[in-house]
Length: 296
Ligand SMILES: Nc1ncnc2c1ncn2[C@@H]1O[C@H](COP(=O)(O)OP(=O)(O)OP(=O)(O)O)[C@@H](O)[C@H]1O
Picture 1 (tube, rainbow, N blue to C red):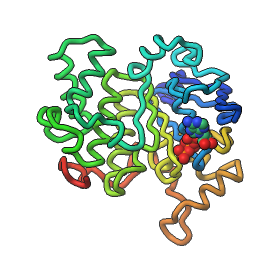
Picture 2: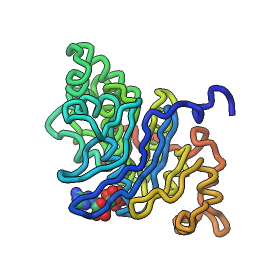
Picture 3: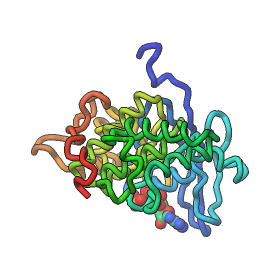
C-alpha cells in the first residue's frame, strides 16, 4: 500500500448502524458501509435483502412513513437528521443516483441537454450558456458520440446503453462526491452492459467519485468493485476487499452466492477477483453502443 493508495482516503460517506422500518416491518437492521473517493463499493445480495433501501436511505428518498435509525454521514454531516430543505440541496449536488431503467428515469419530453442543464442551473446557479457548455462536455465524458448534437435530441432517440450513459451524465452534472448506481446495467442488453460498467469504473477513477454499486450480480461485482459487501435480510453479512470476499468468503451465504454464479469453464470459479478492477475487468462493450439507435 502506498501513501497515495485510495484505500487510505478518508471516507466520504459512512453508514453506521442504519435501521429502516416501514409499517412495523424491519427492512434494514443495522447496516454499516464506508465509501471512499475513487473506490467502487459493491453491494450484493438476493432480491429483497435491502440493497435498494440502503441506497435510497443514503439519499433520503425512503418511502413515506419509513422510520430510520443510525447515521448516514456525508462529510461529517448526518443526512438522516437534515431538514428536507437541506437534504434537497445535498441530493443531486453532493450525492447522486443512477437507477436501473434509464427509460423511466429520463424525462421523455425534454432534450437530454435540457435535462442536464436544468439540474445544474438549479443546484449551481449558473447561466444558460455555461450550463450548456458543461452539458456538452459531460455528454462527451460519458462517451456519447457527437455530444453537441446529442444534447438537442430526446431520450427515445438513443439506445438503452446510451440512455444509461445520459442518466449518468445527469447524475454527474453537479459534480457529486458520491454516486449510487442501483443495478445500472440490469435493464441493458448484455452487449452494452460491459461498456456502462467500464464507464462507471473510469469515472470513479478519473473524478475520484465514491461509488456504491448495487447489484444482485456477483459477476458485475467481480468486474468493477474494489470492496464488496454482501447483504441478506437487512443486514450486511460480510464486507471486505473484492479479492478476499470473492475468493475466500467468510460467510456461508457468500459462498452460496458464489456457487450460484455461472461458470466460465467446468472447473472455473467466478471471475478471478485478483484481477485489478480498472485493468481489464470486463470485455469491451463500447463498440456495439456507439450509434445512437443501436440496441434500442
Ligand atoms: N415502498 C415500500 N414499502 C414497504 N416495504 C418496501 C417498500 N419497498 C421495498 N420494501 C421492502 O423492503 C425490503 C428490501 O427491499 P429492497 O428493494 O431494498 O431489496 P433489494 O435487495 O434492493 O432487492 P431487489 O434486488 O429485488 O431490488 C423488501 O422486503 C421489500 O419488500
